[in-house]
Length: 391
Image (cartoon, rainbow, N blue to C red; front, top):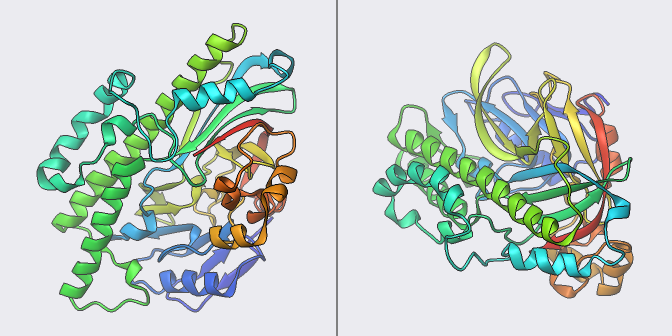
């Protein structure tokens, strides 16, 4: 569907692809639109909801500046999916053992691998890029080596899904783990100090930015680029580990489509409306003409493999998922473990209080999100999960 709402309180308009947008979210979007370096307009996707500084589900093109908090601390968070030659009939009747084996192979929550043997090839691809960053900012180091190839917590997940042809897919969602968080927090704080040093007043301190040409701008671009590469490699390695478990436990199979690996929390250099700009997608994926992307629902709903239509007004973007309709605290207060069990019926997953904040009812209706962005993407495959690993 076309743009549903336009906000014009800022220096540039905000174009919104949904009617379901709260007042505080509109205020947050308007704050971003007041900034002097935002180019042409801000786009808000159908899954838009309140974030820190910048709104989750927003796409922000900027000239001469980047807002670190708009990228956030889960730098490079995104999705990976691949279709297998397996059919639904090839899966065991009970998936509990398979879930337990995946949870053993891929560290979840705050955990990492016990040593770097598993990650040695992946580390060889990402390690060199960190050395320059660490030489300037040694305190950014964390357990990044051991966490490469690990899931994390919150809304991160690994799923086995079935599509409309009963083909099996592996789909997963994660980002740059602890090192991405360290990089994000460090540069967000540095941007705030820069605003204070230059006496720049903002509608929200989390909209602090770096000006292009400054040392901190260049350092941030280098660091965020590395974190995005790390996140991509993290998902690749997790997929490899999951497939290794499946090869050991199931009949022989092959990959029947190239893995789709896309960010939805990141910044990139692109060309829009006559200018080369920095595009920050905070909870949105690139949907240029022909781009393949992944839009997950909650763990009780359908997910989608999509192809972008290259819509200019969306800044060649689309939603990154269903989007939360209530906070984690609200979800825990409003629902019970029995609600969780009922809403995840038919899915092999944890069904305990530890993931109650991820109950499907805490998220928007993915079908409504997809309807609102029918002008932005076309559906290639519709997936329904049968197994879900949560951090």
